[in-house]
Structures are given as C-alpha cells and as structure tokens.
Image (cartoon, rainbow, N blue to C red; front, side, top):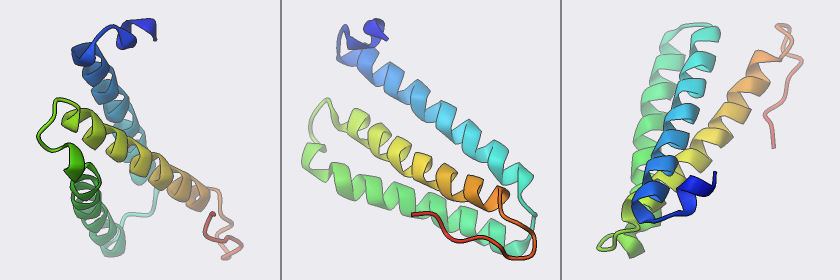
Length: 102
C-alpha cells in the first residue's frame, strides 16, 4: 500500500508483514501434507537453506539500513517458490500423476 512507501521504517514493517503472511501460508500447506520423517527433514533443511541463502544474497547490504529489507525480500521470494512447489504436490494424483513444477 501507499503507507509502505512513506519511509524506510514503514517499508521494513510492510516487508516483514508480507514475509509473515507467506510463512503462515507455507505452514498451512505443510499441515495438509502427509506427515512423515521426510517432510520434517525437508522442512528443517528448507529453513536452513533459506537463512543461509538470504544472508549470502544480502551480504553486499550487510552494513546498511536496507539489510533487513533485503533479507525479508529474499525470504519472501524463496517462500513463495516453496509454496508453489508444495501446492503442486497437494494437487497431485495419489497414483503419482504429478511432476515437479517449473
């Protein structure tokens, strides 16, 4: 919204809220999937990957005020991709009639 464009503090707040929205959406999808050890391992690995990848991505901004925004933008982007992948899995036929999304 326009309020998010007012200043860096508001921009950071809005980005953080958007990230929270996508994390909650991802968690709701996880709950719909078959619960097993592989899913738990995948979730744990996913969290580690996102944190490390976003730190790597945002490293050039590490000393600046935009660093938290870059981290949140990265997390949001990766989480949206993960949501797409898992949503595709939810929509698969149980007989294996599914392929990994692009």
